[in-house]
Length: 83
Image (cartoon, rainbow, N blue to C red; front, top):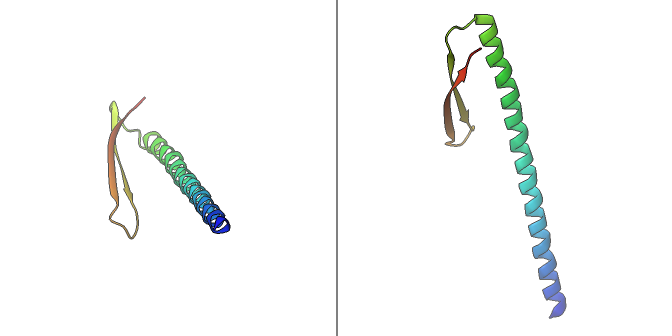
């Protein structure tokens, strides 16, 4: 009976460890994507403001996140103060 209990405990620990590693990989993947979105979005906003000589004190912006094959749609509206 003891060997089967040890095998069960080992399998449970291995599953937890694998799940934690999968969760870590998932979080790293999300952060990598969000970093890319942030960096490229900032560049595009800077280019737009510089090239089009936008006037006014604020630039209204909207970011839409959609995930293909899901019902996910998330919209963030904001304002960016201009120089």
